[in-house]
Structure formats: C-alpha cells, structure tokens
Amino acid sequence: MSNTHLSEQVKLAIEQIYENESLTGNCIDESAKQILSWGEAQLTDIGECDPETFDQYLNKLQRTMRTVNRLVGKQTDLSEADLVKQLLRLVDRTIELSSAKTATQSNDDKGVWVDV
Figure 1 (tube, rainbow, N blue to C red):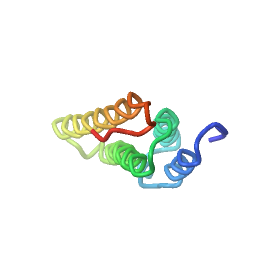
Figure 2: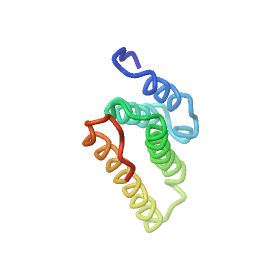
Figure 3: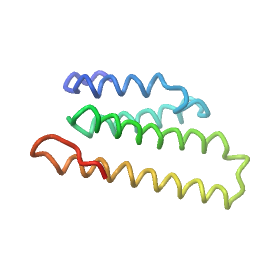
C-alpha cells in the first residue's frame, strides 16, 4: 500500500478492504493475503472516477471478496453440487466486476464510469 501515485480515494478504499474482517475472516493467513492482494490490484487498476461510481465499484469488489471468504469457510460443508453452484455464482460476480471495470476504463473522455 505504498503507492504514492494512487488517488486518496483509492488509498482509502485499499485501507478499508485491509481492515474489513468479513472479507477474509474464514481464511488462513496466506489465503487472506491472496484475497487482499487481488482486491488491492483491482482498486489500483481502475483509475479516477466520480465518488458515487467508485463506491458502486468498491461495493461490487467487496461483495466478490466476501463471496470467496464465505466459500472458503463453507468448503467442507458443501456437497459437490453446492460447491459448483457457489463457484458459478462467484464467476457471475467476477464477470460483473470485470464488466464494470472495462466500461469505466473505456470511457476516458471525461474520466467518468459508465454503470453497467
């Protein structure tokens, strides 16, 4: 989190995900580090945007990270069918997150995100 080129908005969001135990509470240290590192990378890649759109993206990102955390916590209790169902749900959320990022990065005329 030592990137000085990041906006204050992104720096605060990165700090927020590192402090939010609901995003990694079911994970051991190494797994938690992977989830947090992935989340940080998503935030550093998005660039500038208006606060409302940034908050929407951050909420989608945290929802995706929370889903990974829940899946880790339930992995031994899930049947194979339930595991597949949860993984597909996670894929849907990741696609949604990726689509939001792509739409925002392609609208660089005003630096404003397009909600998808």
